[in-house]
Amino acid sequence: MKLTPSRRLYGFGAILLVALTICSRKLSSVGEPSFIIPLAAAGIAYLLAIREFFSTPRFPHRVIVVGFVLAALWHLPFLLMAPGSDDDVHRYVWDGRVQRLGYNPYIVVPSDPALGGLHTPETRTLNNPDVPSPYPAGAQLFFRAVTAIHESVFALKVAFVVCDLAIVLVLLDILRCSGQGAHWVLAYAWNPLLATVAGSGHIDIVGVLLLLVSVAALVRRWLAVAALAFGLAVSVKLVPIVLLPLYWRRVRMRDAALAAIVVGLLYVPFFNHGRIPIGSLGTYVQRFRFNDPVFATIERVAAPQFVAGLAVLAGFLTAIWMRSKAPAWSSDAFAWPMAASLLCAPVVYPWYLLWLLPFVRSAPTVPIIIWTVSIIPTYYVWHLRTLGRPWLVPGWIMLLEYGSVATAGAIIMFRRFTRQAVTRCSTD
Image (cartoon, rainbow, N blue to C red):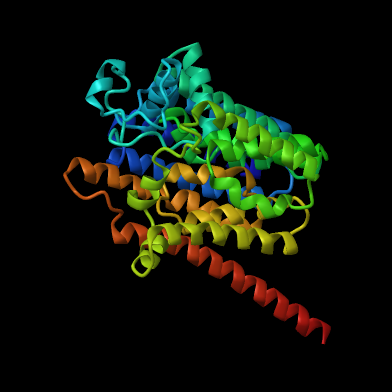
């Protein structure tokens, strides 16, 4: 029996299903070998599937349907498992709860003894209880809306999975409008990092959905919708702010002004004596560190606020460069600015790369695709913490993570220069 591309893809999907199902059973043991090994196996199967996507221009419609079914099957056990006791989703429940009780999440501190009566069993173990919330207003209002329907970790996880499904639908529309193969939606849906959405729950997925809606609106020339969705994405998390150069003079000023007004209005309920609320954002830049080789290196000679500004500047400059080099609304142009900014950030958790996933479907983005897999070993730090070790990514893991990305980038550049040299020689 001939092993066709479709059958190979079915095989990789089956490996992903088995590996991620095993991984879901170990969600309470994040970082232990029993969690990382199956997650890494899923990552390898994912990369092999990506190779098939590049080598096969089109897949039958049934392959895409089966791919979606497999993704749904491995999402379900993650959704049903309880997240870690200090995962971010517990903070989300707290933020939504205190808003509905009339408190400002940018002011109240969860560990304040005077607020002990506000806690529920799901919020008592939230992480970093000594600081107020760092999440922007769009995220805060999302927390409030979901907890108003049902105040629980599970309700938020369901909401995030719904956003995940919506991303798939929007991405399919973008692929159809741009003439790309529909199978590239599986480059998003099959990425093992998405398991963290159903398992631990992360607000990033809401911002990713809004950003993708903005891109879809740009493709259709719905400029007001594009500007508004982009503004809302930034109001969920600041990551996509570096994409502003891609919108300059591509959306009308009146649409940009409308988006700015709407985002500004989101903050009105949180104003404190006329001051713009930022919660613990300053503390985040000053104190929080994880998987930050570039930031740590520069921080030795500069203040952390300055280095954080450089991270944003790196994303802006990359966006300006991509705008001049890449075709209009190229997925590469959206992926690389955010990747450059994250690379220089003080904190690079695995789920931060969710922002990049809908935009990685071309050869130049292969290093980013590899990064979404090579970052998996950083989960080992969660295990080290249980052993009393510092909250630091070991050097060998950083070398594996970023060395894989650098190697992939070097190979792509070498092949490009080689092809250009061959082309010049053939024309001489």
